[in-house]
Image (cartoon, rainbow, N blue to C red; front, top):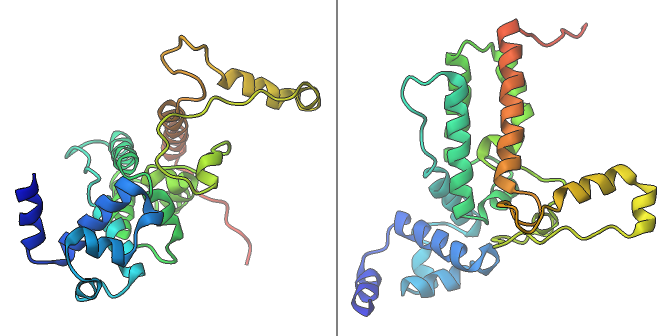
Length: 238
């Protein structure tokens, strides 16, 4: 192992090596731990050596996002639009689960990176090849939102809203105080429904993968019905 590490340190720096080392560092310790100094230390170089390959921290982050998005698998050749889009999105979700810092990093960018643009272009291309009008494809992408990249902004995901990444096990939902449950009975019902029995294969709390696929399939089924009806958005008067 020591020889392997030494060999890696002696390998000449390249942009790809810098970006992949940064991704590995973020995966291991979280994106908040990433700095040019820490990355240089991991690579066994002085920080200034990194600037020959990335101009600054923003460019580093953009490159890291592109490395991650580049891991998303393409659908099977010849697949119909619906299974192709579903397969691509679930592949994206699998990739982003390996890199739990990536969703917030993607959201933090003012402009989409080249790999993100290429990915979105491919998804839209699949819809267009499936006979979707530009109008319907446009609205589908709005409806999918971040889900098309394999993640969603969950309403009850406090850890994600707080900016924490890489949760290992979801915390069981806290019981609502009786007086709050009495005031908001429907919220209380949902909270109780989310508390699965300890013996359940899902464990305590909602199963994130199931909920993601459930919502994705609802969207895809609805989109399919609109497509079959030849749906078009209402034209607004000028």
